[in-house]
Image (cartoon, rainbow, N blue to C red; front, side, top):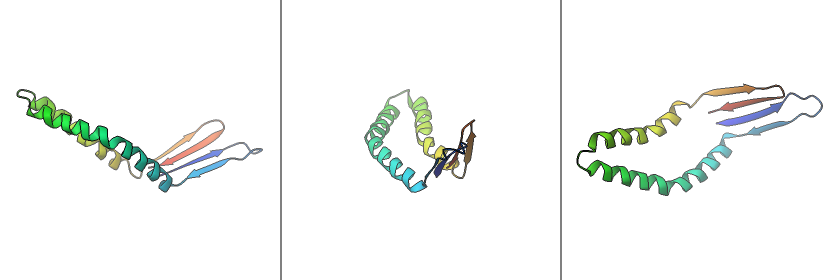
Length: 93
């Protein structure tokens, strides 16, 4: 995963390349901040599964919640190129 930003201005060239390790570092910090809410949501889904009559709806939401990491794993290898009038942005997942 990396990001590259390049300007098309010949007079003032600007290049920025952020390697994947930097993204993983920020992602690690972000995940550490989200651990507590994720655990609270998992406990809430477990309790919701135990309520009589709510099992089908709760299972559906539980499947959706646990499918989110699969989405991020499926976009690995994707490259997005955004080109505007003055910059080029390339993002590799």
